[in-house]
Length: 192
Image (cartoon, rainbow, N blue to C red; front, top):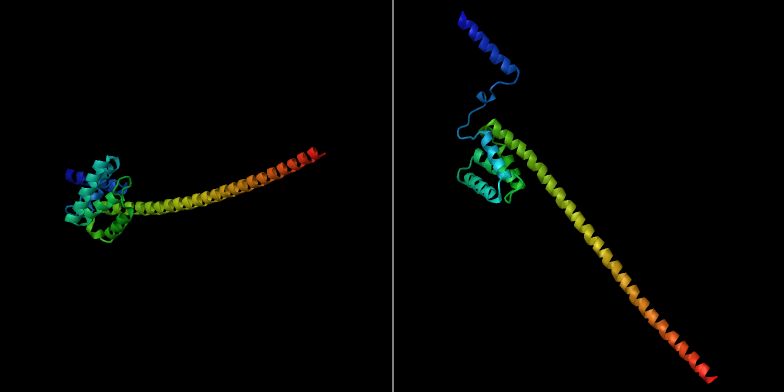
């Protein structure tokens, strides 16, 4: 009887955990041999984001080599996540986007955590690509506007310089005429 009561209480506890969402999800997740835990990916992404350029280069080289030497969903995901991470010299959002899309077509070979990481980073990298394109467009627009403004300023300067040359020439002609008139007046006065 005691055994029956203990079993009933244990079943109630598990049912309670399941209903409240605290159940152990990993026990129902498929097990894929050799697939790293999500924490492994996250720790490497943190080291990549917080690391100095030498650490970042080391992580990139290691991830790239692993993806080339032992290609598979886990190594390709690791490399794609490194490529998708901004803030280091080897960041390549377009290549990461392509790799992540390809990985998400092979979800049966990935753990739920890997699928989640791939999906999240794919959305993130797609947004980053849009932002990069918009920033490039704005730079080009600003550059064009600056060139147009510079051309307009140069045109105004050329016009002002031309006007100054014309006014100097007219002033010189007026001074010559004034000198000629003054000279004529002097000679008239002398002749009188």
